[in-house]
Image (cartoon, rainbow, N blue to C red; front, side, top):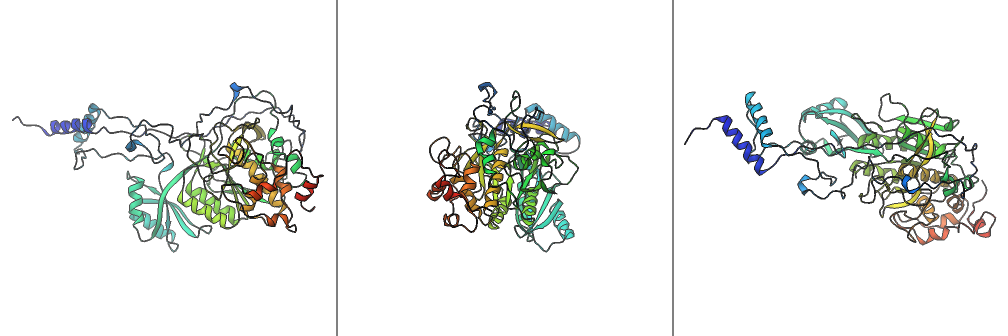
Length: 546
């Protein structure tokens, strides 16, 4: 029997390993929201545009329809099935793993031996697997609840004991806890580090730092000036004769807003930067604020509401659209509640997240209305969050033909729909843009919630939901469905259905179920063509003059 050198033996073992169990390397699954911005000519009159629904709305030809395949649809576990369970990420997606050839593995072994290091082989003879990066999370970051009594120095010492770097930590009154954000400084996986950190007596819970993205998409080119068709669909000009959002505070958790835009002249704004840094205004955040409080050439859904513009989304370090994380979203929610927000608009989506679910429950317990974009991941997407939380009003998107935006998520958690296709909005630097997505549908509904609360500030979140869903205009399959929820929002019907705190009818309406439209709510709904302010039915629904 001939002798075998150590190098030959290592190569033989490597060849056997390749045959028995191919190794894979994770691919880049990240994608980012994008939006087209241009500067159309504006022919819309000041304050209240004159709208003729029969002629103002342009119906784009079929070739111009919004494409259902989105660059920012991160989580679509049902789109790919041709991989084993072991090759799927936590979100269910097939991982793009590249097999390592025998020659390549041999070269790696040779390189290690040449440097005086033997190949690392487990007891079974398998190569050490590289950590798989979950595209739903921020790489190498962990969020943990730690003891309230820990000082910054003690938190740093805790991090060092576990081979971590403390990025930030603070107490969040919203959830009554101290949360720390930590970075893994070596090659250990999040799972391995989380298990070790969770075993520490000074740590109460551990989770990944999840990634959130804004829910916008490219808009196809359009000819001429797009009419603000959403105004007629929602009956906003008529509703504004009764309410305009005065004395109601809406927190917008988004990217940075251009507070100097002409559409926001004399608007009431507060601002908070949950991220830090020096990024300028962004099209998404500016557009969301524009949906709500535009009041010069455009018309917002609640033009006299007070806005808390919270910058929680910044451009990704590796390029792409703005993104945020569990820790930053928690900071934004905490700030919004502490500073008097009555409504929180969340035009973003991500995976189910334990710390954010806890924060959402705390926000709901304080009587704050929450509205979120259903998401732009399409028909096969599972529920995205925070829209999937039952305490949140989830909004899908429609176009000018009352059709569902193809990219819009759907499911039994959808509360109602609002326009979200080719919306004409302000953009940074005094410009304007045409943009689509469930983000903007949610912002319209946040504005409608402000109109309702102006009419009766004592209404609880479940009653606001009841009013909005109970007065919605039914679309699609008769009754509630998974595409439009209760139907398309109707601003005029909603404000007509609310009475002042002195009136009895609103107090007599029972609380709404979170997923279904109660019979009492349906009875509140006026017939769109028959009920007017001058009719007897309209008198019954109309509150006392304020």
